Amino acid sequence: MHFSAFLNSFARLLVLCTLMLGSAIALAAKPLIVGHTSDYEPLNFVRDGKLVGIEIDNAREIGKILDRPVKAVIMPFEDLLKALDSGDIDVVMAGVSVTPERQQRVTFVEPFMTVGQMAIILADKAGRFAQPRAIYQEGIRIGVEPFTTGERYVQDTLNGAKVSHFPTSEAAFAALRSNQIDMYIHDAPTSWLLAVGTANSDLLSLFRYLSSEDLAWAVRKDNTRLAAELNMAIQVLKDNGRLRAIQNRWIPIQVNVR
Image (cartoon, rainbow, N blue to C red; front, side, top):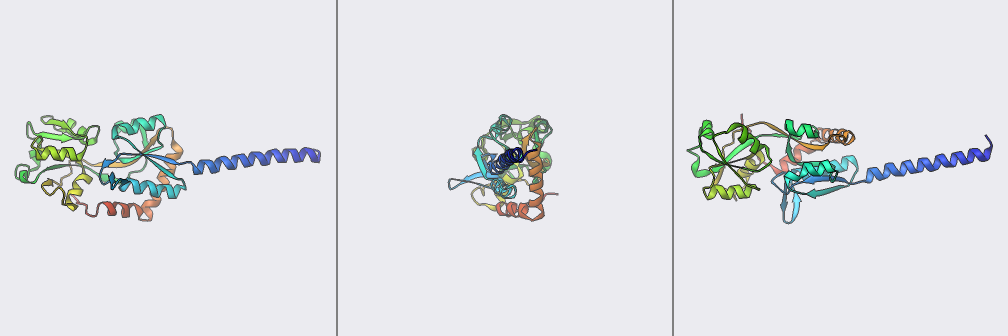
Protein backbone atom coordinates (compact mmCIF):
# COMPACT_ATOMS: atom_id res chain seq x y z
CA MET A 1 0.00 0.00 0.00
CA HIS A 2 1.31 3.42 -0.96
CA PHE A 3 1.90 5.85 1.89
CA SER A 4 -0.78 8.23 0.55
CA ALA A 5 -3.30 5.39 0.39
CA PHE A 6 -2.37 4.44 3.95
CA LEU A 7 -2.96 8.02 5.07
CA ASN A 8 -6.36 8.08 3.40
CA SER A 9 -7.35 4.80 5.05
CA PHE A 10 -6.10 6.01 8.41
CA ALA A 11 -8.00 9.27 8.01
CA ARG A 12 -11.23 7.41 7.23
CA LEU A 13 -10.67 5.16 10.26
CA LEU A 14 -10.05 8.20 12.45
CA VAL A 15 -13.24 9.86 11.25
CA LEU A 16 -15.19 6.65 11.88
CA CYS A 17 -13.79 6.34 15.40
CA THR A 18 -14.59 9.98 16.08
CA LEU A 19 -18.18 9.47 14.94
CA MET A 20 -18.53 6.34 17.06
CA LEU A 21 -17.11 8.13 20.08
CA GLY A 22 -19.45 11.05 19.51
CA SER A 23 -22.41 8.69 19.29
CA ALA A 24 -21.40 6.99 22.54
CA ILE A 25 -21.05 10.34 24.30
CA ALA A 26 -24.42 11.48 22.95
CA LEU A 27 -26.05 8.27 24.19
CA ALA A 28 -24.51 8.70 27.62
CA ALA A 29 -25.77 12.27 27.79
CA LYS A 30 -29.25 11.36 26.56
CA PRO A 31 -31.80 12.06 29.30
CA LEU A 32 -33.44 9.14 31.03
CA ILE A 33 -37.15 9.92 30.69
CA VAL A 34 -38.94 8.73 33.80
CA GLY A 35 -42.71 8.42 34.18
CA HIS A 36 -44.16 9.40 37.57
CA THR A 37 -47.57 10.08 39.06
CA SER A 38 -48.12 13.05 41.35
CA ASP A 39 -50.70 11.73 43.80
CA TYR A 40 -49.17 8.73 45.57
CA GLU A 41 -47.58 9.99 48.78
CA PRO A 42 -44.87 9.21 49.79
CA LEU A 43 -43.80 7.62 46.49
CA ASN A 44 -44.63 10.48 44.08
CA PHE A 45 -46.45 13.64 45.15
CA VAL A 46 -46.37 17.41 44.93
CA ARG A 47 -45.28 19.54 47.88
CA ASP A 48 -44.99 23.30 47.60
CA GLY A 49 -45.34 23.03 43.84
CA LYS A 50 -42.48 20.53 43.52
CA LEU A 51 -42.57 16.82 42.67
CA VAL A 52 -41.00 14.89 45.55
CA GLY A 53 -41.01 11.46 47.18
CA ILE A 54 -39.26 8.11 47.31
CA GLU A 55 -39.39 7.48 43.56
CA ILE A 56 -38.16 10.98 42.76
CA ASP A 57 -35.12 10.45 44.97
CA ASN A 58 -34.65 6.99 43.48
CA ALA A 59 -34.63 8.45 39.96
CA ARG A 60 -32.12 11.11 40.95
CA GLU A 61 -29.74 8.50 42.38
CA ILE A 62 -30.15 6.28 39.31
CA GLY A 63 -29.20 9.22 37.08
CA LYS A 64 -26.00 9.73 39.05
CA ILE A 65 -25.02 6.06 38.79
CA LEU A 66 -25.78 5.84 35.06
CA ASP A 67 -24.27 9.29 34.44
CA ARG A 68 -27.38 10.44 32.62
CA PRO A 69 -29.61 13.46 33.22
CA VAL A 70 -33.11 12.55 34.39
CA LYS A 71 -36.26 14.08 32.92
CA ALA A 72 -39.44 13.58 34.94
CA VAL A 73 -42.77 13.24 33.14
CA ILE A 74 -45.95 13.36 35.23
CA MET A 75 -49.14 11.62 34.13
CA PRO A 76 -52.08 9.66 35.55
CA PHE A 77 -51.20 6.18 36.75
CA GLU A 78 -53.37 4.50 34.13
CA ASP A 79 -51.43 6.23 31.32
CA LEU A 80 -47.93 5.23 32.42
CA LEU A 81 -47.69 1.84 30.73
CA LYS A 82 -49.23 3.25 27.55
CA ALA A 83 -46.53 5.92 27.48
CA LEU A 84 -43.91 3.22 28.03
CA ASP A 85 -45.27 1.15 25.14
CA SER A 86 -45.23 4.15 22.81
CA GLY A 87 -41.68 5.14 23.75
CA ASP A 88 -42.67 8.47 25.28
CA ILE A 89 -40.91 7.45 28.49
CA ASP A 90 -38.01 5.07 29.16
CA VAL A 91 -38.95 3.76 32.60
CA VAL A 92 -41.90 3.89 34.99
CA MET A 93 -40.96 4.79 38.56
CA ALA A 94 -44.28 5.25 40.34
CA GLY A 95 -44.59 2.60 43.02
CA VAL A 96 -45.85 0.02 40.50
CA SER A 97 -46.79 -3.35 41.97
CA VAL A 98 -45.46 -6.41 40.15
CA THR A 99 -48.36 -8.52 38.90
CA PRO A 100 -48.50 -11.45 36.43
CA GLU A 101 -50.57 -9.34 34.04
CA ARG A 102 -48.05 -6.50 34.04
CA GLN A 103 -45.16 -8.94 33.67
CA GLN A 104 -46.67 -10.01 30.36
CA ARG A 105 -46.46 -6.43 29.17
CA VAL A 106 -43.23 -4.99 30.63
CA THR A 107 -39.90 -6.02 32.10
CA PHE A 108 -39.60 -5.29 35.80
CA VAL A 109 -36.33 -4.43 37.49
CA GLU A 110 -35.49 -6.06 40.82
CA PRO A 111 -37.98 -4.79 43.46
CA PHE A 112 -36.99 -1.81 45.59
CA MET A 113 -39.71 -2.28 48.24
CA THR A 114 -42.22 -4.84 49.42
CA VAL A 115 -45.60 -3.62 50.61
CA GLY A 116 -49.19 -4.87 50.76
CA GLN A 117 -52.75 -3.66 50.77
CA MET A 118 -54.12 -2.28 54.04
CA ALA A 119 -57.54 -1.06 55.10
CA ILE A 120 -58.22 2.46 56.43
CA ILE A 121 -61.37 3.32 58.39
CA LEU A 122 -62.77 6.08 60.54
CA ALA A 123 -61.29 5.81 64.02
CA ASP A 124 -64.73 5.73 65.62
CA LYS A 125 -65.53 2.55 63.67
CA ALA A 126 -62.58 0.64 65.13
CA GLY A 127 -64.84 -1.60 67.21
CA ARG A 128 -66.78 -2.77 64.17
CA PHE A 129 -63.66 -3.80 62.28
CA ALA A 130 -61.48 -5.03 65.14
CA GLN A 131 -61.63 -8.65 63.97
CA PRO A 132 -59.88 -9.61 60.69
CA ARG A 133 -63.03 -11.39 59.44
CA ALA A 134 -64.98 -8.13 59.61
CA ILE A 135 -63.71 -7.14 56.19
CA TYR A 136 -65.72 -10.00 54.67
CA GLN A 137 -69.07 -8.66 55.87
CA GLU A 138 -71.74 -8.91 53.19
CA GLY A 139 -72.50 -5.51 51.68
CA ILE A 140 -69.50 -3.72 53.20
CA ARG A 141 -68.82 -0.50 51.29
CA ILE A 142 -65.21 -0.34 50.13
CA GLY A 143 -63.38 2.43 48.31
CA VAL A 144 -60.46 1.74 45.95
CA GLU A 145 -58.36 3.63 43.43
CA PRO A 146 -58.95 2.51 39.83
CA PHE A 147 -56.31 0.45 37.98
CA THR A 148 -54.47 -0.48 41.19
CA THR A 149 -53.72 -3.75 42.94
CA GLY A 150 -56.08 -2.60 45.69
CA GLU A 151 -58.92 -2.66 43.19
CA ARG A 152 -57.80 -6.08 41.97
CA TYR A 153 -57.62 -7.43 45.52
CA VAL A 154 -61.19 -6.36 46.24
CA GLN A 155 -62.46 -7.76 42.94
CA ASP A 156 -60.78 -11.11 43.51
CA THR A 157 -61.34 -11.50 47.25
CA LEU A 158 -64.32 -9.51 48.51
CA ASN A 159 -67.16 -10.58 46.25
CA GLY A 160 -69.84 -9.36 48.63
CA ALA A 161 -68.49 -5.82 48.85
CA LYS A 162 -70.03 -2.72 47.31
CA VAL A 163 -67.13 -1.02 45.55
CA SER A 164 -66.68 2.69 44.87
CA HIS A 165 -63.81 4.23 42.92
CA PHE A 166 -61.85 7.33 43.93
CA PRO A 167 -59.08 8.99 41.89
CA THR A 168 -57.00 9.89 44.95
CA SER A 169 -56.61 8.91 48.59
CA GLU A 170 -57.80 12.37 49.62
CA ALA A 171 -61.08 11.79 47.79
CA ALA A 172 -61.49 8.42 49.50
CA PHE A 173 -60.74 9.96 52.91
CA ALA A 174 -63.50 12.50 52.29
CA ALA A 175 -65.87 9.64 51.43
CA LEU A 176 -65.01 7.91 54.70
CA ARG A 177 -65.81 11.08 56.62
CA SER A 178 -69.13 11.57 54.83
CA ASN A 179 -70.09 7.92 55.41
CA GLN A 180 -70.17 7.06 51.71
CA ILE A 181 -67.87 4.08 52.33
CA ASP A 182 -66.91 1.97 55.34
CA MET A 183 -63.34 1.26 54.36
CA TYR A 184 -60.63 2.36 51.92
CA ILE A 185 -58.14 -0.23 50.70
CA HIS A 186 -54.81 1.02 49.40
CA ASP A 187 -51.08 0.27 49.48
CA ALA A 188 -49.31 0.18 52.86
CA PRO A 189 -47.41 3.50 52.39
CA THR A 190 -50.75 5.32 52.55
CA SER A 191 -51.40 3.71 55.94
CA TRP A 192 -47.88 4.41 57.18
CA LEU A 193 -48.44 8.11 56.55
CA LEU A 194 -51.37 8.07 58.94
CA ALA A 195 -48.98 6.95 61.67
CA VAL A 196 -46.63 9.92 61.24
CA GLY A 197 -49.03 12.78 60.49
CA THR A 198 -51.78 14.62 62.30
CA ALA A 199 -53.80 15.90 59.33
CA ASN A 200 -55.91 12.71 59.28
CA SER A 201 -56.06 11.93 62.99
CA ASP A 202 -59.72 10.91 62.65
CA LEU A 203 -58.68 8.02 60.40
CA LEU A 204 -57.16 4.70 61.43
CA SER A 205 -55.31 2.00 59.55
CA LEU A 206 -56.00 -1.55 60.64
CA PHE A 207 -52.30 -2.31 60.01
CA ARG A 208 -52.91 -5.84 58.79
CA TYR A 209 -51.47 -6.81 55.43
CA LEU A 210 -54.19 -8.09 53.14
CA SER A 211 -51.63 -9.01 50.48
CA SER A 212 -47.89 -8.95 49.80
CA GLU A 213 -46.63 -7.05 46.76
CA ASP A 214 -43.26 -6.09 45.33
CA LEU A 215 -42.84 -2.57 43.97
CA ALA A 216 -40.47 -2.26 41.02
CA TRP A 217 -39.51 -0.08 38.06
CA ALA A 218 -40.78 -1.07 34.62
CA VAL A 219 -39.16 -0.81 31.19
CA ARG A 220 -40.28 -1.96 27.75
CA LYS A 221 -39.96 -5.67 27.06
CA ASP A 222 -37.41 -5.08 24.31
CA ASN A 223 -35.23 -2.68 26.33
CA THR A 224 -33.00 -5.34 27.85
CA ARG A 225 -30.01 -3.02 28.00
CA LEU A 226 -31.77 -0.47 30.20
CA ALA A 227 -33.19 -3.24 32.39
CA ALA A 228 -29.67 -4.57 32.96
CA GLU A 229 -28.35 -1.08 33.77
CA LEU A 230 -31.15 -0.43 36.22
CA ASN A 231 -30.62 -3.79 37.92
CA MET A 232 -26.96 -2.90 38.32
CA ALA A 233 -27.86 0.52 39.68
CA ILE A 234 -30.40 -0.74 42.21
CA GLN A 235 -27.86 -3.22 43.52
CA VAL A 236 -25.45 -0.34 44.05
CA LEU A 237 -28.14 1.57 45.96
CA LYS A 238 -28.86 -1.46 48.11
CA ASP A 239 -25.18 -2.09 48.82
CA ASN A 240 -24.33 1.51 49.74
CA GLY A 241 -27.43 1.97 51.88
CA ARG A 242 -28.93 4.79 49.82
CA LEU A 243 -32.12 2.86 49.00
CA ARG A 244 -32.90 2.34 52.68
CA ALA A 245 -31.91 5.91 53.53
CA ILE A 246 -34.36 7.28 50.95
CA GLN A 247 -37.19 5.17 52.31
CA ASN A 248 -36.39 6.18 55.88
CA ARG A 249 -36.45 9.83 54.86
CA TRP A 250 -39.99 9.65 53.52
CA ILE A 251 -41.37 6.95 55.81
CA PRO A 252 -39.73 7.58 59.19
CA ILE A 253 -42.07 5.07 60.79
CA GLN A 254 -42.88 1.74 59.18
CA VAL A 255 -45.28 -0.59 60.92
CA ASN A 256 -44.16 -4.20 60.69
CA VAL A 257 -47.14 -6.51 60.60
CA ARG A 258 -46.66 -10.20 61.35
